Length: 79
Image (cartoon, rainbow, N blue to C red; front, side):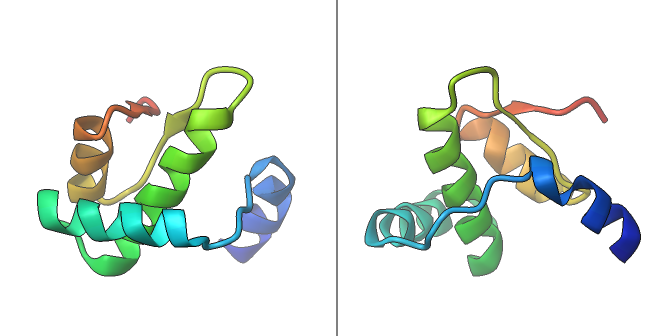
């Protein structure tokens, strides 16, 4: 798994955990049945999606996180 992650990492977005991302994560925890770290991941994805120059799709092996992402307006990767 680590080798696959290292292979794919150049295509991943990395953003700082700003106050805006933290506030967004707090709102997600209130609205959706997700854990705090999942909310932080989702808030980060929403921040990246809002400034992405092209299509942005979210994917996770966690069905609860995928449901929350979809409810927050993100397009999901195919299963």
